[in-house]
Amino acid sequence: MGRASEQQIATAITAWFKNHQRDLPWRKTRDPYAIWISEVMLQQTQVKTVLPYYLRFLSELPTVSHLAKASEESVLRLWAGLGYYSRAKNLRKGAQYLIEHFGGEFPKTRDELLQIPGIGPYTAGALLSIAFRLREPLVDGNVERVLSRYFAFKEPLPSSKAHQFFWKKAREWVEASSQPHAFNQGLMEIGSLICTRHSPSCLQCPLRTNCSAHALGIAETLPVKKPKAPMENTHLVKFVFIQRGRLWLHQNPTAQWWSGLWDFPDMRVKNPTHWKRELEAQVGPWNQHTWKELQHQKHTVTRHKLHVIPIRIETKENPPFPGKWLTLKNIHSKPLSALAQKILHEEW
Image (cartoon, rainbow, N blue to C red):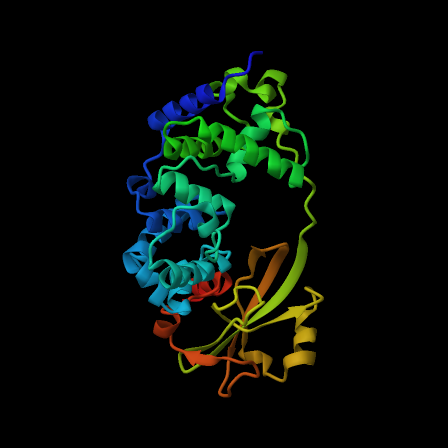
């Protein structure tokens, strides 16, 4: 099998992208701010999930200056539900850094972009190539998958060897492109739509003629991933305290799940069968006749599989947890954790 040149590869990917790209709002602009927001939102999040968040975020915070001046809580409110909330916090910090150090303008070098909070090698490559049309590489999970299959790269990921290999190849390919913005987006789009994790559509791929994994019939086995640590089951009781139509919530502290978001107080329990005994021992005494067990919830956060038991408790006193009373109207103006949103959706 003869190997295509970098220029042939770049030409094939660019042509494919122009004919098959999805109609997405961030592809209709060269504004680096709008592209930055989209790229950060798309990290570990599906396009269909990102779309309404992206449009709402830009509607309320249309420029770097607007984002820099916004409160952390207002930014988190716009982000609530997307997950990985450090992304939102770093966006705000990054906007403030841009105002302070670059007059609100995005620099056009990789080294300068990497100084900005929340911008790593991938995002820097995306901004430089898509917004500024520079021949700069980017590597995300989709690109890793395409490259590992094209070259039949079998080193388990992640590893420093794999990191160096993928960035080297991505640079060689983009430097051969006459349209780096289309090439880089095309490379990612192939990984997203064609060279998928399971059942890749090799016959539709513009790289299939020279793809080593396709020739060897091993595309579905690549990339090789190191085994992940097993998920840890965690059982939580969530306390939904009610007093005269108000609910008791607190703002999650730093270094806790959903840091900065508003949430119902909770307690971990060791025994999911006899959780009421643990509850009585640790946080009683409440009259159990005022308890109402709500619909149980399941949620995943980092490496934890959460099994959540929400209980509704009518009380005349302030609960023995940090927090404040909020009306439903006030609650919905706050950035809420995903679990709080689920519980509210079920009951209100």
